[in-house]
Image (cartoon, rainbow, N blue to C red; front, side):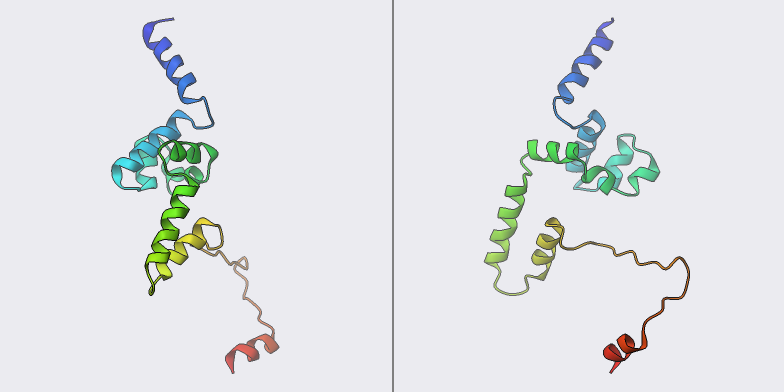
Length: 132
Protein backbone atom coordinates (compact mmCIF):
# COMPACT_ATOMS: atom_id res chain seq x y z
CA UNK A 1 0.00 0.00 0.00
CA UNK A 2 1.40 3.35 -1.07
CA UNK A 3 1.50 6.56 0.95
CA UNK A 4 -1.48 8.07 -0.83
CA UNK A 5 -3.62 4.95 -0.36
CA UNK A 6 -2.67 4.85 3.33
CA UNK A 7 -3.55 8.54 3.70
CA UNK A 8 -6.93 7.93 2.05
CA UNK A 9 -7.62 4.98 4.34
CA UNK A 10 -6.68 6.96 7.47
CA UNK A 11 -8.84 9.90 6.37
CA UNK A 12 -11.76 7.60 5.61
CA UNK A 13 -11.51 5.97 9.05
CA UNK A 14 -11.10 9.35 10.78
CA UNK A 15 -14.01 10.94 8.95
CA UNK A 16 -16.27 7.95 9.46
CA UNK A 17 -15.92 7.70 13.23
CA UNK A 18 -19.57 8.70 13.29
CA UNK A 19 -22.29 8.62 10.70
CA UNK A 20 -21.11 11.37 8.37
CA UNK A 21 -19.50 10.42 5.08
CA UNK A 22 -16.60 12.36 3.62
CA UNK A 23 -18.92 13.79 0.96
CA UNK A 24 -21.40 14.95 3.63
CA UNK A 25 -18.60 16.61 5.61
CA UNK A 26 -17.28 18.35 2.50
CA UNK A 27 -20.79 19.53 1.59
CA UNK A 28 -21.33 21.05 5.03
CA UNK A 29 -17.99 22.87 4.82
CA UNK A 30 -18.94 24.21 1.36
CA UNK A 31 -22.26 25.39 2.80
CA UNK A 32 -20.36 27.30 5.50
CA UNK A 33 -18.17 28.87 2.79
CA UNK A 34 -21.04 29.84 0.47
CA UNK A 35 -23.47 31.18 3.06
CA UNK A 36 -25.73 28.14 3.36
CA UNK A 37 -26.64 27.21 -0.23
CA UNK A 38 -27.00 23.43 0.12
CA UNK A 39 -27.74 22.69 -3.56
CA UNK A 40 -24.65 24.57 -4.72
CA UNK A 41 -22.49 22.90 -2.06
CA UNK A 42 -23.80 19.46 -3.02
CA UNK A 43 -22.96 20.00 -6.71
CA UNK A 44 -19.48 21.31 -5.83
CA UNK A 45 -18.57 18.20 -3.85
CA UNK A 46 -19.84 15.72 -6.41
CA UNK A 47 -23.49 14.98 -5.73
CA UNK A 48 -25.44 14.42 -8.93
CA UNK A 49 -27.51 17.36 -10.22
CA UNK A 50 -30.67 15.28 -9.65
CA UNK A 51 -29.77 14.80 -5.99
CA UNK A 52 -28.63 18.40 -5.50
CA UNK A 53 -32.05 19.66 -6.64
CA UNK A 54 -33.47 18.27 -3.38
CA UNK A 55 -31.14 19.40 -0.52
CA UNK A 56 -33.30 17.53 2.01
CA UNK A 57 -31.55 14.39 0.78
CA UNK A 58 -28.48 15.79 2.54
CA UNK A 59 -29.82 18.03 5.29
CA UNK A 60 -32.16 15.44 6.80
CA UNK A 61 -29.46 12.79 7.23
CA UNK A 62 -27.92 11.77 10.55
CA UNK A 63 -24.49 12.46 9.09
CA UNK A 64 -25.38 16.06 8.22
CA UNK A 65 -26.74 16.65 11.73
CA UNK A 66 -23.61 15.13 13.21
CA UNK A 67 -21.33 17.52 11.32
CA UNK A 68 -23.56 20.50 12.14
CA UNK A 69 -23.38 19.55 15.83
CA UNK A 70 -19.59 19.30 15.62
CA UNK A 71 -19.54 22.85 14.22
CA UNK A 72 -21.64 24.10 17.14
CA UNK A 73 -24.97 24.24 15.33
CA UNK A 74 -26.70 22.02 17.86
CA UNK A 75 -30.47 21.85 18.20
CA UNK A 76 -30.15 23.49 21.61
CA UNK A 77 -28.05 26.38 20.25
CA UNK A 78 -30.45 27.06 17.38
CA UNK A 79 -33.59 26.85 19.49
CA UNK A 80 -32.06 28.98 22.28
CA UNK A 81 -31.02 31.70 19.82
CA UNK A 82 -34.43 31.61 18.17
CA UNK A 83 -36.16 31.77 21.57
CA UNK A 84 -34.08 34.83 22.53
CA UNK A 85 -34.96 36.52 19.25
CA UNK A 86 -38.67 35.85 19.68
CA UNK A 87 -38.57 37.14 23.28
CA UNK A 88 -36.64 40.25 22.24
CA UNK A 89 -39.17 41.29 19.61
CA UNK A 90 -42.53 42.34 20.96
CA UNK A 91 -44.20 42.72 17.57
CA UNK A 92 -43.79 41.33 14.05
CA UNK A 93 -42.44 37.96 15.15
CA UNK A 94 -44.03 35.94 12.36
CA UNK A 95 -40.75 35.10 10.53
CA UNK A 96 -39.15 33.78 13.72
CA UNK A 97 -42.25 31.85 14.72
CA UNK A 98 -42.50 30.33 11.23
CA UNK A 99 -38.84 29.29 11.44
CA UNK A 100 -39.37 27.76 14.89
CA UNK A 101 -42.40 25.84 13.65
CA UNK A 102 -40.46 24.64 10.60
CA UNK A 103 -37.53 23.46 12.74
CA UNK A 104 -39.92 21.56 15.01
CA UNK A 105 -41.51 19.89 11.96
CA UNK A 106 -44.79 21.72 12.44
CA UNK A 107 -44.57 23.60 9.15
CA UNK A 108 -43.48 22.60 5.69
CA UNK A 109 -42.33 24.72 2.77
CA UNK A 110 -44.43 22.81 0.27
CA UNK A 111 -47.64 20.88 0.34
CA UNK A 112 -48.11 18.48 -2.54
CA UNK A 113 -51.77 17.84 -3.25
CA UNK A 114 -52.49 15.74 -6.26
CA UNK A 115 -55.43 13.86 -7.68
CA UNK A 116 -53.52 12.09 -10.45
CA UNK A 117 -54.77 14.63 -13.01
CA UNK A 118 -58.43 13.98 -12.19
CA UNK A 119 -60.77 16.81 -11.19
CA UNK A 120 -60.92 17.33 -7.43
CA UNK A 121 -64.45 16.71 -6.19
CA UNK A 122 -65.56 18.92 -3.31
CA UNK A 123 -68.79 17.92 -1.57
CA UNK A 124 -71.47 20.60 -2.00
CA UNK A 125 -72.04 20.97 1.77
CA UNK A 126 -68.34 21.67 2.32
CA UNK A 127 -68.24 24.09 -0.61
CA UNK A 128 -71.28 25.95 0.73
CA UNK A 129 -69.81 26.21 4.21
CA UNK A 130 -66.71 28.08 3.04
CA UNK A 131 -68.19 30.19 0.27
CA UNK A 132 -71.01 31.88 2.15
